[in-house]
Every structure is written in structure tokens, then in C-alpha cells.
Image (cartoon, rainbow over all chains, first blue to last red; front, side):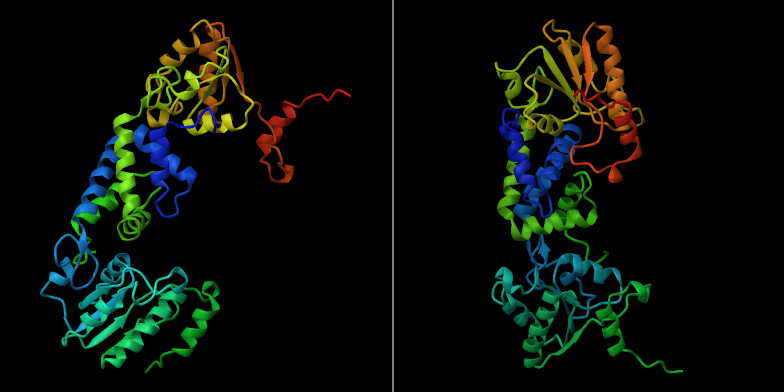
Length: 203
Length: 203
């Protein structure tokens, strides 16, 4: 791309779009052309939304998720049970738990997970804030709902130790075969786990 | 996502990111979290780049591609052969042709293709500009390098008729088995085409 190098403004836009996770050079180019050629209103919308979010979105003082007020909607709600605290990695995970309509307690959003290889330790993850939150004297049980990945499991294990040492009841989401899961297509370690955690059926 | 609905600013950002082609709700959410949590500088860069591109990027008067001046770099270059005009669908296609270093003529970028089902006819594609460009009295041959898709082929066919009627030589990129292509993995219509267009080898 020598003499036909895209002009500076376009190149800068393509480079900026590549900051999005998983967006490579081709996708960034496609995004740029699409916005400039077919959706300039969408482009303007993105500028406005990003600018507003950068300026106006902070963190919920209680649960650490993104919020445009001191408290997020969930933490501000008087209808949530303050004795149950569910710890998730991301706002998306929290949204998934909410969708199940099975949890009426409160949340703490880690905004990440322990990941020593990426330099994310207890300090970087700000676990002190979680310990303070869980130690408010009202929370009695902490439900660890980090992912069932290696890092999520390690995070849950580490948090479990800390929280139990403070006298809190700590639980973890159950592991097992997913609803609708066919054994043939479920990985062996999940089946092994489901076997170990098998539940007695009472007639 | 009732009570844990993301706050307004975040939701607006996720919606805006969904305007990018091929970005669904989950990817948009991932993009938003990434920018806000891990790459705020990247987010600011995107705001600036998009804003600058929206404001400053126009079209090259000659070839119709994005340009931040009246002429793009290629059209402004005195070293390009003005008698050859290569018609491509997008700036990305132009960049691919340039990378081959086999073409020293000039370009016309359609910024699309004929696509009646999407309501893109000759008028919407602005083919009048191409006809004027090709009819400048200097261009002698037009090379149609639209894609070898159904719509690209139809576009080439339609353009070929118009351009030949104006007394211009019109050519199309050769079709055939790709370099490095193994017949076993090449589709039948490509092989059929390569067979029809077979070239005599002279000893």
C-alpha cells in the first residue's frame, strides 16, 4: 500500500478502530468504510456516546460496576437483600445472573479476575474494596460467581480463603452438565465434576 | 436485564457500537467494557479519529475514493499512466491491486456495486461520474476489477456495455485457479472457467 496509501484521516480512524478487542486490520477497515460511506449518523452517534461515557460514567461506590451516579440501579434499589453478596467478574456476567431472576441479593463486580500472567494480582484487582464491602456487618453470605475458567476458579479460590477467614459464609455456583446438555458433547472434566457432585434423588 | 439494566450512558455506547458491521450485542458490550475499563486512551483516540474523519474526509474529485484533499494521492501523482483506468468496488480492493505492483494506471472507486435487491441501481452508485471520468479523452482502456461475486459480475457486465458503447476498450481481470490453488479444493465453477479460458502453452 505505497502510493495508494489511504489518506491520513482514514488511516488514523482505522488505527483507532483496531483498539477494539478482536478487531484486526481488515475488520477495522471494513468498520471505517461502513461508517464513512453508509452510516455517518451511526458514526456521529458513536462519537457522542463514547464521549459521554468517557466523561460521565464512573463506578458504583458499593458494587464497583459502571454507573452514572454514585450508586448503580441495583445497589440503589431498596428491594434487594443486603445479606447476600454475589461476586462476578464483569457487568455482562452480572446481567446474565440477573436474567435468571433467581437472585435477589446484591453484587460486587470485580471488573476482571486474578491473572498473574497479565500482571493482575489482588492489588491490581482492588480486592480490598470487596473485603470492605463484604465486611459491612450486614452481608452474611458471599456467592462466588466468577467464571469456571482457570483464572476464574483461581480467583474464587483466593477470595474464598480471604472471606472465610473473616467469618463469612462463602458459596460457589454449582458445576455440572448444562441444562439441555447432551453427554456426548459435554467435555469430560464437566462430566467428572457432575459425577463427583451428583445429587441423591429422593423418591 | 431489568433491575440490573446497564446505566444509560453505557447502554447508549453499546447501542452505538452495534452500528459497526457484524458487531452484535455481545461484541458491542465487550468493546464497550474494554474501552471504558482497559483502554480509555484508545477510546479518546477513536473519538478524535472518527470526529476528524467525519469532518475532514471528502471524496477525490477524480476517482471517488476517500480523500482529505481535492485529489487523492494516486490521482495527484504525475507518474501514473492516465490512459488506463481500473474500476474497483472499494478502497480496500484498490489497496489490494496496488499491493501487486503490477498496475501503474489510475483508478475509479465505485464505493459499492450494483445491488438491485438493496436498492442500489446505476443512479445510486453514481455511475454517471465514472462515465464522465472514463470519457475524458485520455483514458483508452477501462479494466473492470469488481469482485467475482454475483453482484460484482453484474456490475462489470453493465459497466462493460456502457463503456464499450462509448468506444472504450474494456477488459476484466482474468478468472481461474488461484496461485497455489489445489484443484481438489477449488470450486467446480472456477475450474470450469479456467478450462474455458485455458491458455495455449507455446514450446
